[in-house]
Length: 283
Image (cartoon, rainbow, N blue to C red):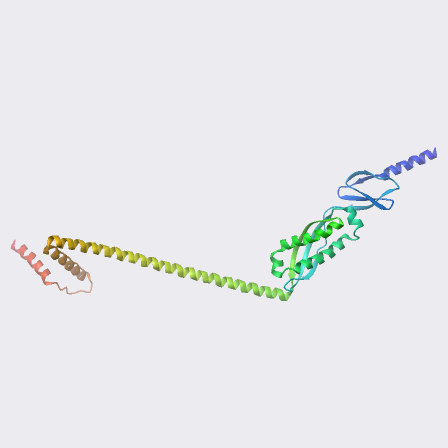
């Protein structure tokens, strides 16, 4: 009876130890007689008691390496320090355990070498202005190496680029010089535009004045043409009329002047007035 109870207890223990429930965030690595046999994904699994054992439980959640400042030299011999953020997750649990001893340390070492190699091919301005492209290039280089360790890089991002104090001072001077240059260019462009507008205004005024002179000349030419036709058709009467009209206009101009005290009239104008007065008195 005791043997049966012992056998039953042993059977229960073996059954319990053979059932493995793997959570969603992990993979279990099963070894058979000390050798890697298979990987258990999330769910319910059975293992062979005594012969098979779960040796490693690997987290497959996405994780981030500790941000570490990397010192490197650019193509134009400027020493800079880069803060790099690296996100990754375990893609193949067996490789991450049996091919590399310390995943984080291995990735850090590879990152330092890759970053220094990529930054050494780029000048400081390229690093500052092309962070996204540079991050993608670093990620591409790291992905080729990390696949051998069962690691999938999900994101590589350059967080900060820091330079030494002397380089910062030189960059600030360069920036100030560029700002001054842009200000001078804008001022010159504004002055040029102002002068151009003034010249256009003068040209417009001259064109309008020339147009007015042309219209006046055309009117005078038309008047002369009419007078010439009248002279040709009417004779001396038309000539006398034009002469008297000119005299009357001149007298009106002289009389309207505030400084004129004495107005001298031509003799023919006086004769005309005398004749008109005589006719009035004769009546």
